[in-house]
Each structure stands twice: as structure tokens, then as C-alpha cells.
Amino acid sequence: MMHAPPLPAPRVGADAIGLLAADCLKREVATYPKPGLVSRVDNGSHHDMDAALLDHSAVTLAPFFALLAHAGATGHDMDRLRAIGIEAEKAMLRATGGVNTHRGAIFGLGLLCAAAGFREAYGVPGTLGAAVAARWGEQILAGPVALRSHGAVVSRRYGVGGARTEAAKGFPSLYRYGLTALAAGRALVPWDEEAALVHVCMALIAAVDDTNLLHRGGPNGLAFAQAAARTFLAGGGVGDASWRDRARHIHEDFVARRLSPGGCADLLAMTLFVDRMEQA
Image 1 (cartoon, rainbow, N blue to C red):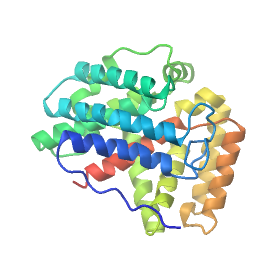
Image 2 (image 1 turned 90 degrees about the vertical axis):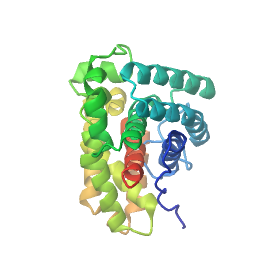
Image 3 (image 1 turned 120 degrees about the horizontal axis):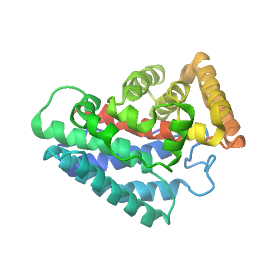
Image 4 (image 1 turned 135 degrees about the horizontal axis):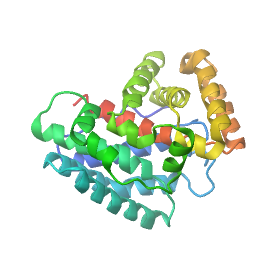
């Protein structure tokens, strides 16, 4: 089976950054098997969305990611980024008939687009995550909280940081686990980029307290998911000859329990984006 090569580094410019962000969301959808998540093979643990809907959502969001990159390049604060994000979410919901396909990605990937625009405009050294933390970290934590959102409810109930804390700190999980696993996966199977992305997904599930897993399965669901991913990695990850069958069985176990690591899916797309942008 032939698999798509890694995405190229983007051209400089807000439009190119927006298109790259959308492409990274589509690449996440195209990856299989990812435990409990939508792919072009099946809908995972989701009854209200499929790959075509997620691809349509990603295309819809590309201009908003470009607007966020432009806002970063022109020195705007978090209020402006938040306003663009609100409009992006409205456009997403119109495009999907009310289905929340990419709310988490609008926030996390959107901040990285803004940081990319800032870095491209001002030539600032350092990572995109460091730029997010330095420029908008305090404003992220001080901003309004969607009290009824699943992530906010779970964060309060179980005492986990969630997406806001992750972003304000510069996305440490992305750098510590996502990019490290991407390099490891590519070293294990340099001819198969899809395998490397599955490796990233498993590494993120194993390490991150995903609020989507907590929302769907509580602490027991999270513990089950993390144990399954850690077992996969301990068995050699995608370096094991039977990795695809093992990953598919984990996927089926997640679906049977209605578990979906949506936060890790966002981080997978964000890992791809950072990998491409930080090569530029």
C-alpha cells in the first residue's frame, strides 16, 4: 500500500499558513487506525460525523486560520484572536449542520497559526509554542471560560488542566510527546508516514489526560485508553510487524466502549503543523 509523503513546509504568508493548517486536519482524518476516531475507513465512536464532514469542516476553516495568522503577524492581542475563533466556530457549525467537528482545533491550531504569522512577520526565534505562551499565555488563562463546555466541566470535576492550560504553557504535550513520537515513528518505518502518525496518536493517548476521554468514560475510561496505548508502544509500536492489526484491535475496543480521544486528535494535527512550520 502506498502512503502519502510528509506535507511540505509552507510558503511564507497567512494564506499558506491557513491552507497548511487545514491540510493537517485532513491528514489526521486520513490516518488509520486511530483508536475511537473518525477515519476514511469508519466513523469510530462517532455517530454524527464522518470523514467527508470533517474534510468539509477543515476546508471551511482554512480562511479563518489565515485570518489568525494575519492577526498574529500584525500584532493583535487575544481579544482579536478570540473574535476570529468565534466567527470560525459559527462557520464550522453552519457547514456541518450544527456538528462540533473542530472546536478544539480552532482554539489550539488557531493559536499556532497566529504564532506562525507572528514569527514569519518579525523573524522571532524559538518554537511556535513558546511564542503562544509568551505573547498570549496570560490572556488565555484570564479569558472567559465556557462553563458548560465538556472540557470545562471535566477539567473542574477531575482537576485536569485541559486545553487552556496546555495552550498557555506553550503546548508542552505537543513538544514532549507529539514531536518526539513523530521522529520515532519515522525512524521505525521511514517508508510509511501513516504509520508514523499512528505512533504519534498512541503516544499522545498514553500520556495526555484527554478531557474527551474523561467526558465519555470517566477516570476508568481514561485509564483503559492510556493502558491500551502504553501496551501498544511497549510492544514496539509501529516497529512491530503486526502493528496494524494490534492498532485496529485497540480501535475496536475503543469503539465498543464509545471512547474517543478527540483532544489527542487535535494534538496530532497540531504536531503535523508544527513539524512543517518549524522546518520552514
